[in-house]
Length: 277
Length: 279
Image (tube, rainbow over all chains, first blue to last red; front, side, top):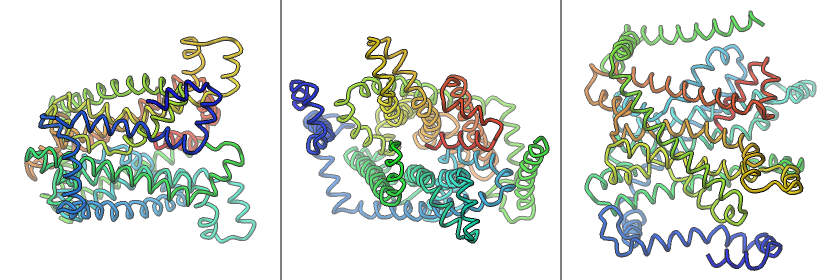
């Protein structure tokens, strides 16, 4: 709270300047995290509540179970499902999206059904996937891939449809082959939207990863959490929750880094035009 | 023009008929085993049976109840806090990282806490929905409130418009498109989370019926697929309702006006609807 008082006391001009310097900006972004952590630590320190164990014991369980202990196997198996399912979803989504873009009639004919599958709340498919594929590796990967494919697919299709016709005509005049123009004109132009789709797909994939492990599994983070919860091991449950939170945040962070690398030319161009968000 | 529409819709019906026919054919030929995946006619019969009784409608009602309560609470909290945060630069910069962090947490991580606190109840369902809806929407509201056009901002200052009047006549209208996009995404997220809370948490509604049908064995699988279809239809209807409402409420805004001007080109309006759902 002290930095708040300081910036107020220093007056608006100085505060604005201070807020623009890099360390001050970092400090502004971080202090609330620190405050929340400290509040949680001391509020839960003497906690006798079964449901809200002290943060210190949660962190201890986090270290003993997930970093050095047996739960590492659950983490590895979850991440494996997630990675395989997500990669399949991304490749299939971009591939079929591009295919549908090139086949206009097929696209028009199937668009309502693709939309239906996109809007369908994917977790309802978990029981159906269990009856079809059992409760093993295949079921989870199929489920994650099937649920996560739609945002990428529809965004790919959509981004490609938005490509400027002039660019397509130009590439034709310049004698590019149709496939060459797909890779050198259409894909780059649609890239920002494809990336938006991939980001959505990632969130869906993480949710489906946990849901599938929760309902039917013998391994994975979801399985660990549900076992802990049903066994009244609330410290273990909280440690699993924190692991999930970390996975969500790290996945998001990695995605943003990759996106900035892959699309830096796009943001650069937008910044020149003065429309950078 | 009319010919093209007729062709498109004809093709769509043909695709539907072909898919359903293929499904039925594969079941009849024994390629799909009946104890794993029911035939199309069995599923359609089950859907009809369920729809003529009260069981299906009760499940839909229970799902909608959790969805609506959670959505209202989450949206109200996000509008209030998002506006307050967005109006102060320091508060915005301090809080935005924390919001991004909570937004990145998969909601399902919070589910066990909801379960130990409230059990498989309506409260658990709408609390989870409200939590899930709040974080993405509060970001949209902050962006919206901060996106005020500099010219409009300076004009309001010069004209001495301030306080609630400034908020109602300048800030809110300029934030409205951001909020509308956030709301439409929130409605979809709310349905998914609600169904997860039923499927995993056991709160009553569509998700719970689907799991119960799965546990009851192959003879009840047609009912399971019937409920899955209903969940999809519910998703389409809710998403559609929010799109229509947005067009109606924001008809004055540029984004909607340009959509209208180009409304002749169906491709564009479809694309736009989709983009906004996804963005």
